[in-house]
Length: 110
Image 1 (cartoon, one colour):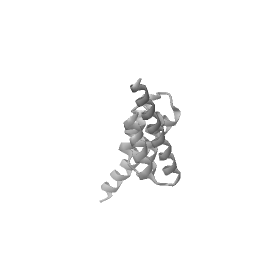
Image 2 (tube, one colour):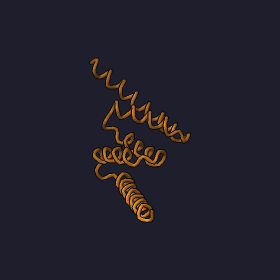
Image 3 (tube, helix red, strand yellow):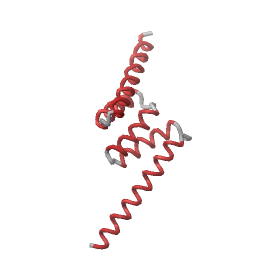
Image 4 (cartoon, one colour):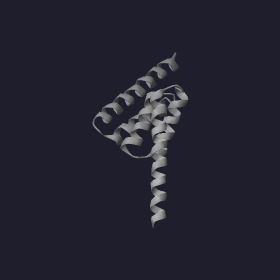
């Protein structure tokens, strides 16, 4: 019986962190949003929406493709048919290739 109460408390905490992250995101506070969503996935590693939004924040707000990819890959493990995650992964890989090509072209000109 005690475990069920703890589970409910953790679920409320997780949802609270997630919702707070949404508020931070709406206020363009990427650091605050990332911190909240990170806490949400620590409490519930199977929280798809938190993983998905973490990926978005790392990609769009921080320009951190590697961390974004890790987050989206985890989200994809949880929902393999999610088209939004697949779309974001495809775009991120395309951007990485374009960046690599641009870097290669610059180094060839030097």
